[in-house]
Image (cartoon, rainbow, N blue to C red; front, top):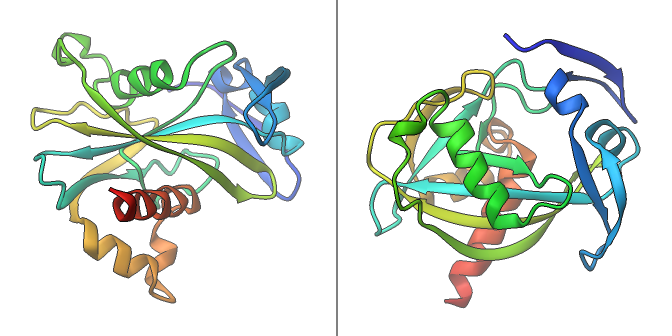
Length: 200
């Protein structure tokens, strides 16, 4: 198990893996201009805007069912809530798509890199602003990944995975109590996806 570090953020005590604590991100503006290099901890303690990606996973290209991830209880935020199959911070100097590909490999094929599809095809959908908390402000980009093979999820990140009807997810996110089963980040990503669907 990776060592974790406890740190006081703006409005809660957060817990980081040592790798996260040592990770560098780009501090960016609303228009995605790079301001400076910051640490993962600075981004969340000071509420500094940074970049992130979400990858929605589908088994079939009719896109009616999505495979979603129950976040690990070890996660600093939204533990044991349903979430995108993959979500990653974009590291310092990294491009969005590279971060998405890295996230798929690390979170869905942990320790099994030989099982990663030789042609890992991600469809870029849309950019969106994910300001899910006072201490989490992200310029995010959403990707779609179709894959029906075996998954090897990173148990530090993911407790379990489940296929769920996309329309059911939208309905539950509108429900006064069921909406809290989903992470705020995933909810924002789904609203961006809904808007994208309405434009295509």
